[in-house]
Image 1: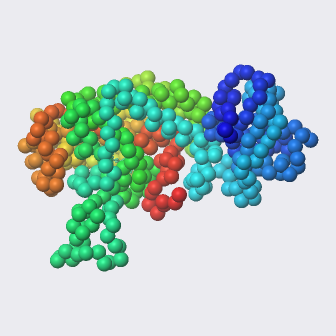
Image 2 (image 1 turned 90 degrees about the vertical axis):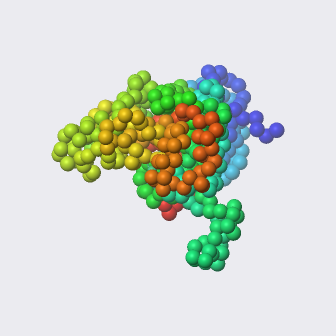
Image 3 (image 1 turned 45 degrees about the horizontal axis):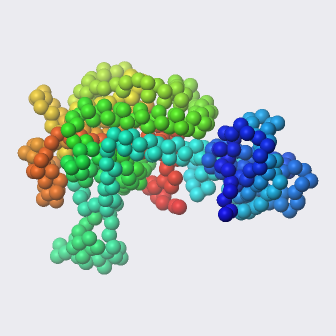
Length: 484
Ligand code: ATP
Ligand code: MN
């Protein structure tokens, strides 16, 4: 058995000394031909491995370069240096994998996040990305735990779908037909997808919701947690072409139940990360603080990362309707002084992210749940509200907006009434024949139900304080980029 190592995290956590241990990991730095800072990814902290002067061969010492992988065995002793309680006095050091110092792209210094994106295959070996991806893991675990403990069934919805009805975003086509112009054609010149692999035109999914609803009509509570794809050509810090989404769907929930679930869920997973990733979050808070110092005073956030997270878990989200939000925005000095790029004038306009951010960051200074949006700007499956003012038909929708991120959750109570659903689909030119299976749930035992979608990367962004969504997913997919 080769692997008799102790993780660096466990080693640093134990108070014990004067025992033999083996560690393995990657060299971060090698100072004074004597002190190796070694990291194995179990924690951001390095163990100091001491190679006493004169004890090791010069040829070996030369190979202790940044990036090299080594195995070190020796005695765990109390450390004299500051910043750590223990260190390893090496008796034996073995090079498992050399790393050419001239060619290894990561130097023991600060690199820009943009540069690190170009070496995404190695960026896991930096403190920032080590912390980010351990927090990401922890959040993913907490999500499953939250729903599991509540009795939800984890549903795997398909990644390849035929429905293009939802309109959540532009889709990537999936086909095995040739792209050189020789694909079979219909009489009118369009491509004959009957000859394609699935005998129809197919895409990568933009959301698992419609399938999720089918399962909720049997298990009562389900959630999905999987990749979704949108071919949106938006080069923002909040959009990816491939991202992960969590979509709970719950029978017998109305809009208020839905909001309560979403708020409880978000607070739970943040709390989990705060309890289980203290060191990583403290590191990220420090990183953010330094980054903020580069900004002009007016743009700096008022709270540090940890304070912000504490604030979110300890305070109720502000709930208000779209109509109330429009009134606030229209009357705001910001609007009157024409500081918005898109001025807010009349009821019915879609909110831009500048408006969402104003409400969250300037007006309420806390997460906001906006409800009851105009039907015109929302999807066909959202439930029509009763007793609306004339000309102001709304739906039972809810979006959750977070400071620094904007929309983090989009959800609604679903239209469970067949007549209204069909009418809505007709108005929005959504072909009912194609969604026969979805409509069957309204034919056979329909019931009130609700659900939402939370973008996992936006959550990770929020918790880690990372400014760009491309830095919270291991291998980001965005326009003109699919390396690695
Ligand atoms: P936005 O207005 O920010 O583009 P959306 O209205 O398209 O969002 P939904 O279709 O409601 O979003 O998707 C549900 C959730 O998925 C959003 O609240 C967001 O957290 C996340 N999301 C949507 N699009 C993306 C994307 N391209 N990259 C990462 N996350 C996304
Ligand atoms: Mn979008």
